[in-house]
Length: 215
Image (tube, rainbow, N blue to C red; front, side):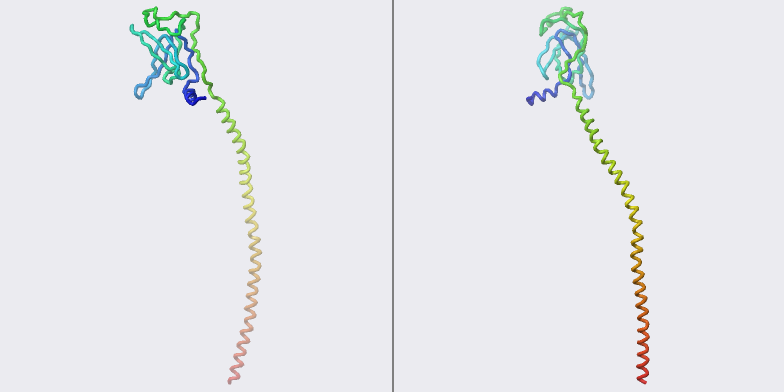
């Protein structure tokens, strides 16, 4: 698709009213006045349709206080709120320019009495509904994948306190084993002090002998 056509396709409405030349319609148009916005209704007879795609237009003619007024509307314009069918008219031409020279009742088309007044719409673009469904399925799959991970995390958190409780029970045994060599070292030190005591007595005896010899 051409770039310009793709851009125009995005600007088109999804649904447009089914318009026919010769019908009397009410066009609800948005009017902006400063910061305010209101809807203005213009009622008249469709005298022509022209253009196609985004540029499609239709012209509505009415006579107000003896003065003919014609307005051309863009079908895909966002300023056109809606088009309401009031009266179905008979027309055998595509352009009803001859109504400009008529006055009074002759300035209107003949009414098709047996026709039903229905506001029909033509679908141009289909609404995309599948995208949200796909997103919901994706979220469900992600949730299904994430749930086992959460359960594993819970199991790990439950197992860790058991290991911490077992560790302090073993520590006193290690301390008791380490305390036994300390007691043996104390006994050896006491034995050494006991051995050093006789040595000191021998030194005293030698000194006493030396003093006797000196005398």
